[in-house]
Amino acid sequence: MTEPSVPGPDSFPVTEVADDPATRPFWEGIEAGRLLLERCLGCQAVIWYPRGFCPRCGSTAVEWTEASGRGTVYTYTVARRSFGGWAAAVPYVIAYIELAEGPRVLSNVVGVPPDEVSIGLAVEVVMKAGGGAYWFQPVGARP
Amino acid sequence: MSRSAAAVIAGVYEHPRREIPDRTVAQLHAEVALGALADAGLSLSDVDAYFCDSADPGLNSLSMSEYLGIRYRYTDNTDTGGSSYLSHVNHAMRAVAAGQCRVALVTMAGRARSERRGPPAGRRNGPEADFENRWGIAATLHNYALVAMRHMHEFGTTSAQLAEIKVAASQHAQHNPHALLRTPVTVQDVLDSPMLSDPLHRLDCCVITDGGGAVVVVSPDVARSLAQPAVKVLGAGEAPKHAGNGAVDLTYTGAVWSGPAAFDEAGVRPADIDYASIYDSFTISVLLALEDLGFCAKGKGGQFVSDGALLAPHGRLPFNTDGGGLCNNHPSNRGGMPKIIEAVRQLRGQAHPAVQVPDCALALVQGTGGRLGTRSGSATLILGAADA
Image (cartoon, one colour):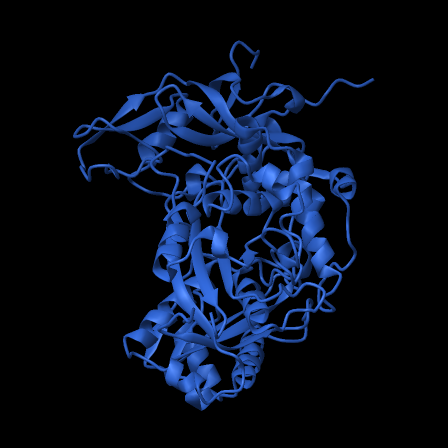
């Protein structure tokens, strides 16, 4: 019997990000291993996705703060068939992660067999230089 | 009771083919336009308002109206994915009511089946793209699977309950000679089909087809001289459902807003509806719409569909009697147009006899465009038979 496949970002395609001044600090943060969130200095809302202004109150006074990187799985799917550059990566887990700071963000759950993922699972962010993205793994899992 | 309507649907036409490699998209627009106008007993020169979506060739209605030889007084290229055409009918109804036009043509066409191995049409990315497109949501299916998984978690909905929606659609499709899939399936067939993206199976998905359709909306005085029974546009609503600055809640759709707006304008309630065309990109799309439109309580959709409620002609809410997107037609991955057309057939009494709802007086059309797992457009129409 073979071990269950454990998806990891090494098998995922890298997608270029658009060159956007409003989001550049976010992606520079990811490159440096930091998950940054925009926060509104007017109404204190956490802004997701980052856009340089607050969609709640309209303020353009926003600041970057480092997130805890912790969250839980809000929902997920195991992609068992996929397309393009992702076809060879199946099975992999797409999920909304509810960050400790509030926003529910799309990502992958990695470092765990897909069939062991469940809603409510506690996860933490993982990043790697040049990876072009950020992923989440069960808290305490080995990278 | 005879309700008044500001505008009526006088003509419809659904392209009969499901794979059309030998036509351009523009040609398909022309074919469905002429088909719907012929159905109405009108011609292109009668048209003074034109609607198509922004995915259409060239500069949308500017290019297409020139191609079709239409000089419009009113146009709209609202694009909310597959629900666009319900919005177009809404806008056409209001334009007619306001005296902006008398004969509005709505066309839709595309070739998703013929072009599925070719490069997708390039579209400018939205500002959200970088935060959504790097985790392998490589198909619409993956996006909707996130919705289905959460619904199951919160409400105990099962795969067998979702399968009942496909079963009902397939029962209806067997009577439609144009349907891509005409063989009835069972709940077990759905559960035995390959799991593509948990918890959705292959048979939870709609078909991929070429094709198109068109609708002609006219003022009541134009309709009086036409042969087909008029179908009244009694009410309409539309709404976007956004990701809401990270406050994603996948348990409901924009139908919670577009539905009540349409019901209120028509002065009717869910219990009054005799037939419903409900956008069925996936089985889960139908389940959420049934709940959001008030046909059952939130979270009870699974129970609602399990007792044969959707089966024509005698279920509590006969739906998608053409076989819907799940079995019949989902032209260019935009299923709103066939939804309108089948509702018109029902209200004219022209559906297939095996699925014609007796004395069908009021119909609801629900369109859901875009992607339920991220952002989607919802549009709802309430249509009435000529004597409704």
